[in-house]
Length: 258
Image 1 (cartoon, rainbow, N blue to C red):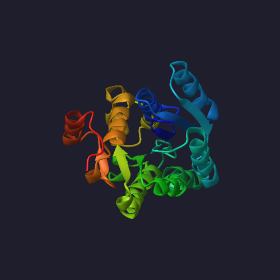
Image 2: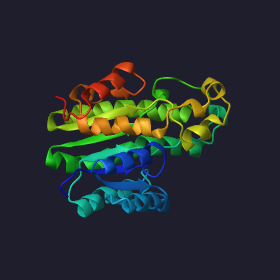
Image 3: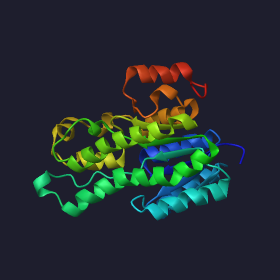
């Protein structure tokens, strides 16, 4: 490969799929990763039909060994690894704490938080060896805004904020850029499903048809991959921040802000 290589966990739907399309069109070789491998393969076949370099694998990010296999097989297939994007996640259970299923609650934490640790654990040795790379986690405003019925999701995303900051501190001197990306409200299947539960003010007041399409968030993620801004390492990069949107427009086409 002469172009960059990206793995997108949760890459078969929503923001992950939109990001796969944009990065593939920009010349990346893409490994689309999804818990349901057939979903990932459908997207990969579509993009390959357009002449793009895309493969797909099945993986449950709750299982470290499966994540490690994705990393090693991607490098084997494409020869390198430049970007890892974690768009995988769940929101269930959506219920009050005293009514939540304990197993589902723990599963939400495992996927959204421990799964991110698994990605860091499996990818970082390779990125450290080449002294470069980008890892982007999909965050949420729920990380800092407590919402009724969303205790598992809010808690997992709050933990992800700190995990990302810790990892960024560990690798900041090795040209590895770690970001939490907060896309705001996006019209995806996951969001629509969550808001169907009229359990809190967000679900009661907001209409998903008013939200950004996934392509808006995906475009900002692609910008982070290109620009790699040093000052945002380890931070919550918030797409709804007017200054951030302005920055994307002003620095379009530039790389490696330092």
